[in-house]
Image 1 (cartoon, rainbow over the protein chains, first blue to last red):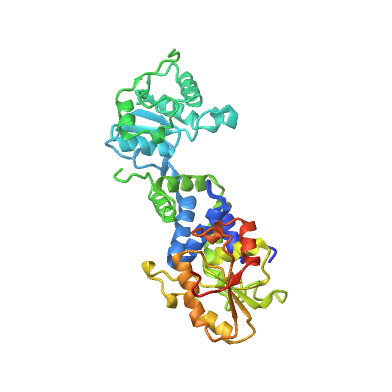
Image 2 (cartoon, each protein chain N blue to C red):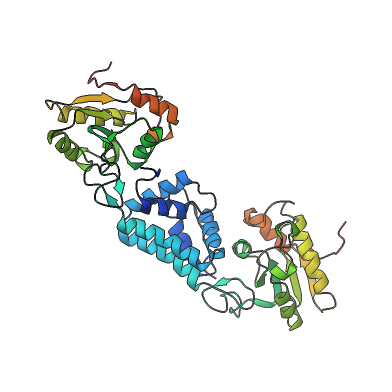
Length: 206
Length: 206
């Protein structure tokens, strides 16, 4: 046995699982042997759920949120206030704001934030489409709900410059969320208050 | 949006992933969104590796170790000493002993240990097949390499009674591995020494 593993099939499964973030080879082995103990139908539907998600999930053509169709449940909901757009970094942040039940407007998912260190510039994000949405009219307020980090502030600032001259009010969620904390880990009460108490966006707050 | 998730496909993927041991819904969401960022071929081969492992992996008909064929690489290796059988709880323990490079005999994987609390009795384990292997002849030594716990000791004791009267020497790995520790977490040096210094199995050590 030159190989550490008694089976190439096991080796392949461990290799696949250890490619997941935070999963080392020892954990991957435990997961593989756990799956081996489940019945066949369970393992097949496990794999199917992942493949179907990857193959079939769509991004909303308006806000780029994850969706089962071309238009997400939020954008297609006539009860939502279409005149307000909340700008967030990613899908988790949409879910975090939704859970507060304090917001009835729409979203715009950037797909990241400007981060020169990671090589992410404005062109890699859904910023052009946000400007387009605002330019198309009917939007009276854009709320920045980005993380209160250097990158988040830079992104809000960049977008505010791109929206300059358009008849739209720019606001940012209240800094009830402690500076430096990631949005998705904030407790619902704090995050909800940040949305209710949002303040006018100021290019030079200091 | 009555559902926390913006997409049923995402919900399904998160549900599948959170079924893994040690993976909560938040981690499952991160894993799902990580997989979404990978290219399609990667996700497909990820799922395939798991399904193929589950569907095609076999258990060696002699020692019940995992194998790609009916007979594992160890049992089919003519250079291994077929007169010695090392009894272990599971596949991870085979791998742990192999890594010490101190053992050239064969194995017998019980598939667990006797544990009344978990409802696991002798009939649930590969004990009959071990007795059969010894009875078939050609085996001069059976080494117990089970965890030094109440359950491990009970299992060794039970098997020793089943082998009574057969012309085979019973040994147990030296207790260099600290009592109460799981075999698979022992460092290679300690575990290797335990195998080299194995002692005669004594029904009443105290």
